[in-house]
Length: 200
Image (cartoon, rainbow, N blue to C red; front, side):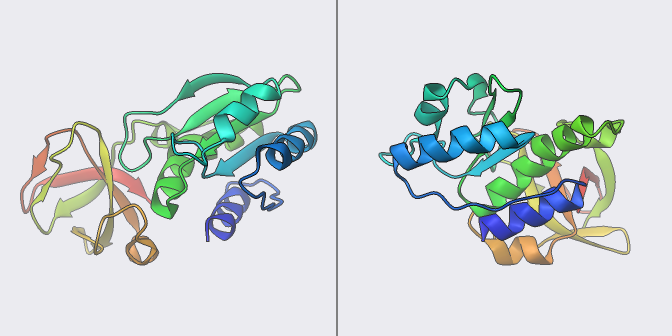
């Protein structure tokens, strides 16, 4: 599902995407990543960037000379996220394996980078700290965590309701959503109060 989701997202951003599946094998990953970095402007990898026993991406990228600018970010969903550059100039993005996390981090970080690489001016609403007005809350929404949280929502006639379960594997809620509602750490929004985030 991630491959289809991200390929379409790249194409919607104006890029030309080639979808490749690589098994969780460091030798095969090393060979594939080296070739892909040589022939691509941007490499987007979904999964394998966290700290589990089979999360080899960060180590393999280091092996082929990718200089990691940052790894892991203060965001929900999407904490296991990597960005680096290959010596040949390819931008490398390591996205979380859960589909919603992959989509959110793509929209926040990868899409603006692709558009900038193509020479497009990046609008303020495309920057990572997105605050586009969405409407007013149709329900009380609270972020109990210590990270900014992007929740899937549906805007109808200026009123925003959450679109089902907000777990990072829940594709059905994302499929119904037309916005991502941003809540700051500890923020509560009551019914009728304005919400901001990203329109999708």
